[in-house]
Each structure stands twice: as structure tokens, then as C-alpha cells.
Image 1 (cartoon, rainbow, N blue to C red):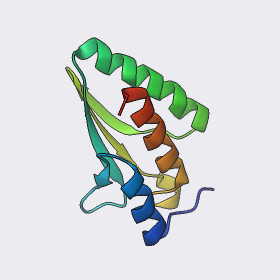
Image 2 (cartoon, rainbow, N blue to C red):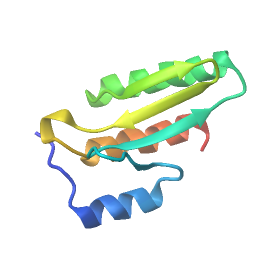
Image 3 (cartoon, one colour):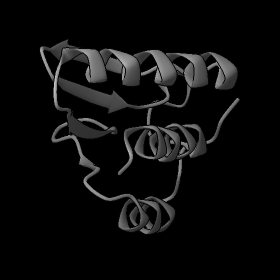
Image 4 (cartoon, helix red, strand yellow):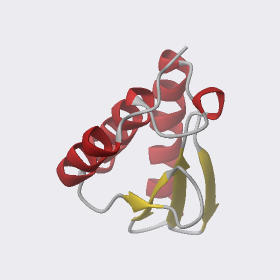
Length: 97
């Protein structure tokens, strides 16, 4: 089982992730991705879904037209773990961030 990150490790990881921030009232991180159009947003979600399956770690997300809102947390650890940081990093790379 993944272990919840300490406050210092979490802060260090967030400092390295552009645009990711803490979710108010939850032990989770979030980011909004904006694309040129729906096709680009959907392609990003498809690539991200493949990575999520590989990691066996799945995001909470929603898509409206060209915007994808993502929340990451590890439910089994009741908070942010290294899995969330890995998926956030991969999502940034796939979005070209």
C-alpha cells in the first residue's frame, strides 16, 4: 500500500509541479488543463487513462469541451502519495506543460 507523503515531501513535490495545488478541505491535489479544443482534451484524457492503468492509480476528473479538471489522491492512504505525484508528472508531460 502507498504511504501518505509527509507535509515537507508534499510541499517539495508541489513546488516541482507547475499549476498543481492543494484541494481545500481534502488531502488531495488538483489542476485544470485547458486545450485548444475538445479533440485535444479527449486525446489527453486517453493518454492519461493509459498511464493511470499502468500505475493502477486513477484520477477523479471531469471534462467540459476543452477543459479537463483533475483531482488526485490515494484513497487507500487517505491522502496524497508518490503515486499521485507520478501521475501528475506524467499528465503534465502529456499535456505539454
